[in-house]
Length: 353
Ligand code: AHZ
Image (cartoon, rainbow, N blue to C red):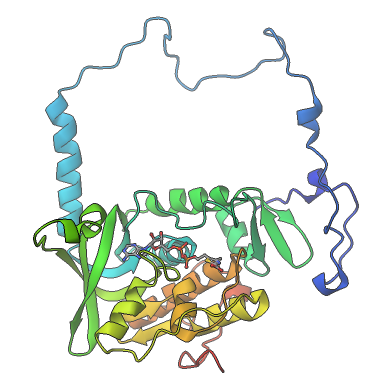
């Protein structure tokens, strides 16, 4: 269970108010943690730091290795992953906050094989920062329950919580997710297109991201493919790679329009993103900010609760599509907080609903 930092960071006792009544937090400076006010101790006194292994740091030496062994270890394992995931249960396109939340939730079922494809070398999308270039990440309740599950500490305020650094969320969810045996992250790989058969999305067309970015500087460099029973598109809002999934659906005539996200309204935006997370065409679920692109709903700016809950909803939609127990039709018995069990909303709703 996560503990909160409120007691150590806040200089005033907290009283419960609605944010409409003006939170006691607004404008109140946060006092420095007391340890920062202590002078750094010198010498050996009070030091009880230990190293887990007793290396001799004065004459240190690694065990020997042949260079070719390193190459073969990497190549063999990556190629085995490509062979294994050439035909998989779910492909998640985009490892931002929504895609990672979806993958985390989905991969709790060990029988579901999940491939995450991220065009950037570094997964995480925009969630390494909270907004602009600031570190803290604001998460509106009740999405803090997801943080409790992930054991991420936060500073609790009235109707929201604040994680001291967005990177703490992103690194924690990634470390738990990527350790699962049924998950593979293919980073530096871009989804260039979709496999579509009989009106159903049946997988993705991939290429090394650096190749995708250089198509116009080379002669034809054909892509690779990955078949999937379900594709989850979490490509974020429009940008060099953003909204790739829904833009492609429009260009091949599977949806009529991609109006683009509307201007910022945090309250309307976050509810709409969760409500409109859905299977947009057979075989493809859309989550995160890409939802706002397709529905012309507002953006929320620097608040991340909707990315987490939308990702979780996308995971349960994928489980439903796979015919597995899920929180949408009440058949799920796994670890999800009752408040986060999403009502089986009418997923055909539009932004104007
Ligand atoms: O690199 C992209 C990013 O990491 C990746 N991506 C996009 N297209 C791809 C493609 N192939 C592979 N064709 C691709 N990867 O998708 C990820 C999207 O992450 P994100 O953080 O941009 O989107 P998100 O929906 O997870 O989170 C959005 C966070 C935002 S934006 C916003 C605002 O602008 O108001 N507010 C919030 C909270």
